[in-house]
Structures are given as structure tokens and as C-alpha cells.
Length: 436
Ligand code: UDX
Image 1 (cartoon, rainbow, N blue to C red):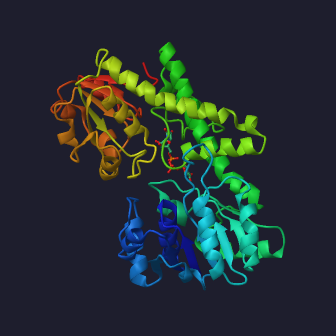
Image 2: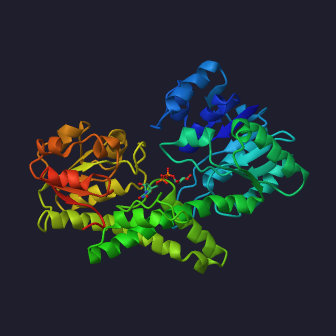
Image 3: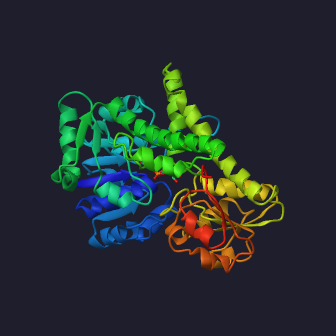
């Protein structure tokens, strides 16, 4: 099939390349000439495992191209909208400028019977406001939310655990659902759950899923706060409750909390939308979820201060990790960098290392010092702070080796990802979060 993908950021670039990898002819369209040039040359503009390979293969096959020219969308049967919906500058609501602009720019190039499939995360009710513009061009608007995780985006796109399509009532909607079944043919052939629903439900599925995940993380972080007051160990608690299949162990990782381009802004946008709908109290708990999450960053700072005897002033602190999570170079709302910046603000000498995110971090926070080589970064540290659980720190850094590089033997594990016993055995003073 011929497809167009409007917006070539984390979502759109992966979607375009992944759709080409399963045999479609895809044009990716973005307003950013530099991004288009990089993608056209087969270069992934950000780090995402597997993206580079499918991008190169797609371009070499002739099935994948990128342009800034919206007219290139004409002739495609399905047009995916994958532009950003960031948090508004002066509030919590989602900024829909890019979604509106993308639809307005696309409409003149639509043909009768085309399907426009929104993938961006939007406040429930957005599709209803866009529908008249799309239908006036004879096309059908559906919402097909994306559940991909950064670091696993290619796999999640090609082989998702479910597909959700919100369609308008009637024949056009049914036909559009069939068209999307054809688009996602490998997943459909594998009998991946394919849920066809109405537009508001599809929009809501996405925000509800992210709200649930954020709530799960803040729940365990709230338990970490209680554990800290009682001498309990939140990691053992998570293991124990996680054995209950109704609860499940995943997303019960206590530590410095969630960040990134999705969960924080999505729960805030959800709160704002619920307020607009007069249902603010239904999701009032999301404010608490956000507050607990932000408190954990502050707690990490306190833990470092306590571990260094009451002050970080002029202490050398090596921060392992800058990305908001491993397998990503994304630093949007990264708890890791937030903690590092606060420590610098308190007068510590902060050295940050990360396998992928250093360039992005350096651009935004020039006040920190950045060292690419992990061992070089560790040299002379009074305290080591782990804030992103890359394998390079979690598995591949032995405490004995680290001890040959640092000045002090204090490690604060902001992700509860190290083997505490091994570090203690090697002579380190180990501090986890929510652990005695
Ligand atoms: C999330 C959703 O998982 C995905 O389905 C949606 O499409 C987009 O938002 P992503 O932002 O890529 O994906 O990251 P995710 O893996 O969900 O992690 C989010 C944050 O939560 C990270 O900062 C991570 O470190 C943190 N986290 C995750 C925890 O603190 N504890 C956990 O147990 C799990």
C-alpha cells in the first residue's frame, strides 16, 4: 500500500521506517528540512535500537522516502498523523498546534476514500473537532493510538501487543478499519488483538494506559517513602506483591521516578482535559501521582547530601546516566538530569556520563561537565550516583573496578538497579531508594 506519515519525530520516523519494512511504500513528511535531509540520507536523527537498519534498508529498497513537501502525500491510501502534542508553555493542557497544522496542510492533498489515521496522543474529543475538515475532503478520520516505548519502538511498531482503531459509525468507518487491517497485515496474521472502537474510546485508551503506568510507578514510589520511614525494603515489597498476577511485577521499579516525553505530559494533559469536561475530580489522583513522582527527585538529592555528611558543596559527584531511561538518547523531562542539575545548583562538581544522551544533555544543561568514557567520569569521584539503569552501569561495572577509580566509596542507586550486596562486599557504602 502507499502510505504517508506526517511528522517524523520519535513516533513518525519509526512508524514510517517500520511500515516500509513490512512492504509498504511510504513517504515521511516533516517541516524540518534538517530532519528530512538526515532521514533521506538513511541517518536516524536520534538513537533508537534497530531504527538505523530499517531506515537504510527502506531507502535502499526505494519504498521509503522523506520530504518537506505535503503534496507528496497525495496518492497514499492512508495518511498517518504522528506530530508532537507537547505540554503548553503556560499550563498543563496539550498544545494541539501541530496536529491542527498537519491536518490543515494535508486536507488539500486528500482524495475521496483516503483514510487519515491519527497516531499522536491527544486529549479525548480532538478527533471530533478534526473530523469535519477531513470529511469535507471525502476522506475518513480514524484514531489509531501508538503504544510504543522508546528503546523498543521498532519492535513495538512491527509487533505490537494490541492494535486499537477508533472509527466513526457507519460504512466508511468499517471500511477504514479494514484498510488498517491491511496496513498491519503481519500483526493481524499473528492474531494480535485488533480492537475496533469509536473515536473517543480510542483516544482515551492511550491516555488511560499512560495514566495507569504512571500511577503504578508512583504507587511503588509512595511505598518507598513509607519504607524509608520504617526500615522496610521496597524492592522486596515489589517482588512480593508482584507475584500476584493481578498486580504484576513490571512497572514496580521504585527510584527517581518517571520522565520522558510521554508519561509526565500525558497525565497533566489528561487532568487538564478532565477539568474542561467538568470531571476534574475523577482524575484528581493524577495530581498526586505527579507530586509523588517529583518528590522522588528531591529525595535523591537529599540522599546524596546525607551520604556526604550534610553538604555537597565542592564535592565531586559522578552521575551515571542522563537519558530518561536506558536504550534511549531522549532527555526530555529526564529525572536523571533534573537531579544532576539540582546537585550542581547546591555547589557540587557534577560529572555526567551516558552511552547515548550526552550531546543532547550538553546542549540543554551546559553547566554540568560531560565525559563520554565511563571510567574517566568515575575517576576521583567522592560519590557515585546511578540515575539511568544502562547495562553499562548495572551489569558491566564491577564494584571492585569502580573502587580503583573513585576517591570515595559511596554509591547512591537512584534506580535500585545495582546488586547492593556485591557493592557492599566490595567495601562500598550503598544507598538505594526506599531500602534500608
Ligand atoms: C511510555 C509508555 O510505556 C508507552 O506505552 C507510551 O506509548 C509512551 O510512554 P516511554 O516514555 O518510552 O513509554 O517509557 P517507559 O518505558 O514507559 O518509561 C517511562 C519512565 O518511567 C522512565 O523514566 C522510566 O525510567 C520510568 N519507570 C519505568 C520507573 O521509574 N519505574 C518503572 O518500574 C518503570
